Length: 328
Image (tube, rainbow, N blue to C red):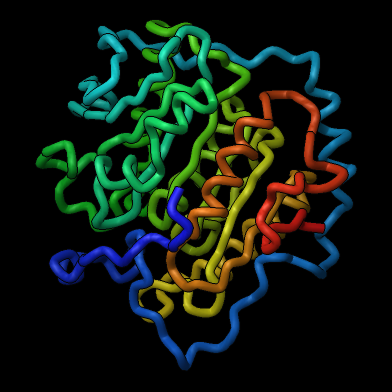
């Protein structure tokens, strides 16, 4: 991966259509406000709700002998999963997903990558080096197109890219479920290695999935997402180890309508109170994510399995960026 942060995306054409209560950033340093006061640190270094990381380790140990659940039932006809664009039906809509397969996809893990507002699947896959990640970590990497991006008229007015703020969460929840069911049917994926990752709007959606699809996930990577009035906290059914990042006081969108620094801090406080294991990377570069953090995050995901032990519970590997820490 290149060492520089991702560059800004032009989203001026989208601004007029955005819902003020649900406007989310692209993979960009959008709308930085130099007069903003410092947001709550995402390190979550104080508070009665925090618990020692050993709590999460104990919880995970209890799950070692458990078996991941079967994918959700799907009564449609699954497409063949091959590298390229795959079309399928999910939640009553025709949807599309970019698929990147390792050289031997049978029994591979499954990684979802969700792009930000105003971005697209092709660009995000390129930024995240999806093809390289698929081969390096033996994962089927899927980069869904948002409902509007898929050309569905019923979804084109959505100003949030993913469907969590319009009380239709299960529209994209169905997409997650269908991809999982069909990938498992066609490739016999490793159910112990299912992951989600996203940036900005895609990170808010990955946050939603971490809370509402925890029964399937082995770990999550959330780059400038979190919980707030748009995506309220909901305790997940089971522990999902999380690596996340935020960009400091300028990690905002629409002059602070979404304060990602605070949203990540609130997410981490809630996750620790629930006994989860969390690693936070603080880069202070605004609304973006740096390549070293992304590289570390993919390694973090790969090192965690469903119901397995916590390999980083006693300390991060030497390869972790210096700005990444275990949340106490």
